[in-house]
Length: 114
Image (tube, rainbow, N blue to C red; front, side, top):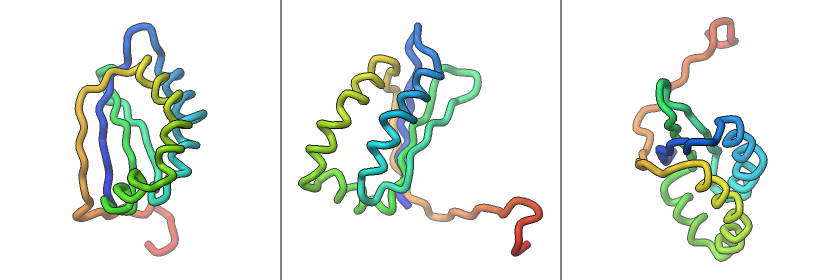
């Protein structure tokens, strides 16, 4: 899996609930349309006004294929209003791209297979 992390800070005068509403109402539905995108997330960094916006992809190649496809420019045009709203509320700080080298999730207690 290939994951991107982008660190953003919430601008003064905006609330977390507004960001969540934008993500749920416009950004998530847009990313669902991108082939190879497994999901997105938003993590708040405790004790700060900063957040990590995450994108989860099947692979780096899958992300590159999605953003270089013929339909991407149409997707981008439709997505742009949501991105403009995001930029009104958030300030970009930094970004990372990572590839899983080991990913193991424990089953919750009581799950079958324990």
